[in-house]
Structures are given as structure tokens and as C-alpha cells.
Length: 314
Image (cartoon, rainbow, N blue to C red; front, side):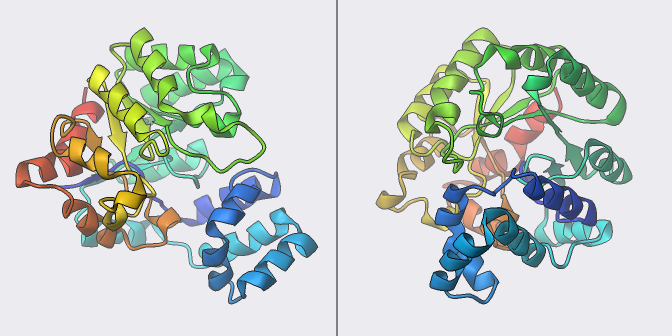
């Protein structure tokens, strides 16, 4: 059995919402993403890297990002095709709404309701909207079947330990659902890198010891800091979404120390999350590469299912 804590679901509704987000200047319409993924996107569009770089200047980032999105989401999945992909990969449950591309609240709720035993919807916080959004979050959990909160400090340009998030965290404790908080390098180059560093998680865990926290995307370049936070707080788990598993043991990756701890004292705090769409790899391949990192079958079961199941079924 496998739970995927960040499973891209490229349905028609997700494509529609992604296109609207890009048109507004959100999502991956930032130079950092073009620097990081430019070679991959150029190849996807059948362009040389030089032609792609020139297109950034002539077309602008938004129009070029829309071309990338149209190509990537050119063939959307039907609901049935998505579930078939989960079946083929051996995924028992998939969290939706935790990825960089997501549909509206209503669409997520309807999709999850259609497959109650398979899909786990998450609510994306908007702290700038104040208590109105906290009430919407509570309604999503109580009435719409949502099972957790997503916090992306870099998207909101507000670090995850800012007090505007605290009513959301308090509500998570009250409702018994986890908060999944981006804790890694982000690629928005118009705002500080430190918005997502692990020290933010440490402060939250100190103030909310009953809150189940999932530090998303693996913590690089602050790996030792994230390990220290997880060792201090047993209510902090870590996922490695969007990071290629087979490269993690390389000394140059920066993740080797984290994998060592996942196989030892932090084995109860690692959660599998594929981010397969962002990686551009089949989810089944990412699963296989992740399982190769676990030293025992007991540890593999914890990583791939048991740890996530524990915090999702409080």
C-alpha cells in the first residue's frame, strides 16, 4: 500500500485553473523557474535553449509560460484515467491540492467525493484574507471532506511562521488535520529565499505541539537545519516531493545526510510524495526509486504508507 502526499492530477479542471493562474502572473511565471527548468521546457516545445531564451525576451514570461502549460497539459486526464494510473502504480490513496497545479475548491471536493476511498483533498490557505479564509477552511473540512491545510509562504510572500497563519494552525489542531508547509528552496526571484527555511517550522512546532506538520519538498539548501527541527519535534514529518530519488545519495546532491537519518532515527517521520508532474517522470518510476533508498522492508512500509496514514487518520 502507498499514500502519495503530493500527486499531480492533470484533469481538465486543473488545466483550466492553471491557465488562469498563469494569466494573472502567478504560478511558474517567474524567472527562477525559467532558469531552473528552461532546458526541459525548451525540449518540450521543440526549441533550442537559445531560441527559448530569445522567446522570453520577445514574448514575455506569461505568454511563454502559457505555451509550456498548454504543451504539458495538452492531454489532460479524465477522472477515470487518473484513478487507473494510481491503480497501475499501486497507490492506495493520493493527496490532491498539495501540488503546484490545482483546481478550484469545488472541483477538488467533487473529485474527491467521487472517489472517497482514494483521494484526499487539501485546502490552500490565503492568510491575507483573514478569518474569512479560516472559516472557509473549517467548512471545507467539516462539510466537504478535506483532510489538511497547504501553506506556501513563498506564494503568499509571507513566511509560514507569520502570525497571520496562526488561526489556521489553531484550527488544524481543533479539527485534527495536518498542515503541509513548503520548506525548501523556492524559485520566486522577486522575494526572499528565507520565506521557506526550516527555522519557520521550528517556531510553529514550539507554539503548536499538537499540530501534525509535514515539511514539504525536503528542505534543501537547509538540510542540517531541517534534520535538527525534526529531531526536536516528533510532530514534524518531511517529504521529498519533486526531488529525483535516484540522485539523493550522491554527495553533491546535499540530501545524503537526510536519507541516512530517514533510515535511522527519523524513519517514522519520512512521508512519500511524488510530485511526478513537476518532475516529468511516471509516478511508478518515482515510487521504485524511492523504495530503493529504504534499507529494510519495515522502513519502506513506514515511508510509503504508515507514516502518512498515521497523521491523516487522527
